[in-house]
Image (cartoon, rainbow, N blue to C red; front, side, top):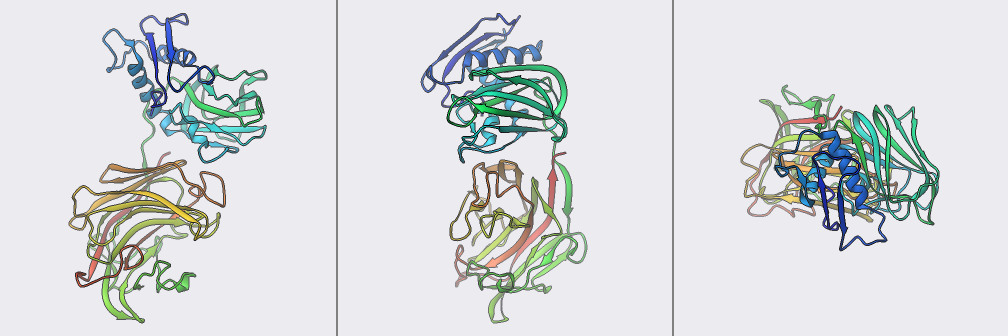
Length: 462
């Protein structure tokens, strides 16, 4: 994070005391950036001057006593700004050259990544700061494939736009844009025409704001089910019954699972402020195991936010508990072209929990990515809080507040990034028995097993 990326090696010295436009700036480019690259670190230094002037007279705690900034100090300076301000900017674009050049690359604080449009004129990059901020300009770092004609528009509602800057003879490199300070939320860079045969491409956009270092708005609770009643709240959930065939899936729910899902109190009930799902070994409708599965489809559906649940997991061979999400409307096609988000899963012995997203084409052309967390905890012995923070171009996974997985790259055969994770999704809670991943129960399996859910909550930013 920040301008001191692994691919950016340079020395930058700025004297912070008494900075003026004529302050001493010394920049030396080495290693990965040669004279042909468009990122001009002298210009980056000029932007740093502006930043420092805005923030004077206070000198950050991790700078030298005399407030002299060396390369590392400047990296800390810039990183603080990028994390607290740019880290919460959503970026969208009219197009992208490919999965490595998507819109968020222009606001990720990494000068080795970039947004690049399709090889067309009249393309745009739009930034949403998530809230109104007092903005007075931009710093745009163009790649060699730059726009020779472009304009910058601002808005507070993404509907009515005001042009604050027009350049009909741009020459790439770094553009330092200043305009009258105004309170805005959205910024759009309209690339009218290209200077090269390629698209319009931007390494990084930095926003000049005297709201620098103001923390982003906190998450606010927008919905929850605390399971405080004596029955499942059917305004939030519906039971899913059977072996999957009534939902258009092969027997075994598409995973060769061994259970039959029911809505019986033997398999699912609410008691003492908890939802309890129970997997049992018993003969029922031709199956040897029963369990329960519920979903919030068309009852509680969400796009973006912090989704969390406090859960005590089952543990024995053949168990597959999950708290997960599926698209409410599969606008990009069948599974997994329209996506799946697994907030937490466990298989067999509950000493490891898993995070995953499924995406790509329709089965069997689907793919997935994710991670796991294991710190020696037996997750069946007590409740733990499992959460994702799902934003426009990033999904983060947590266990008890510990970040353990982060996904920023995915794709769908049915649409451009950030598809498929830019649509409403709904929740599912279940225990599967057996299946492709955990394998079947065996002689070591102990049943019944319970998945106990204290609550499910959704937080969103204003």
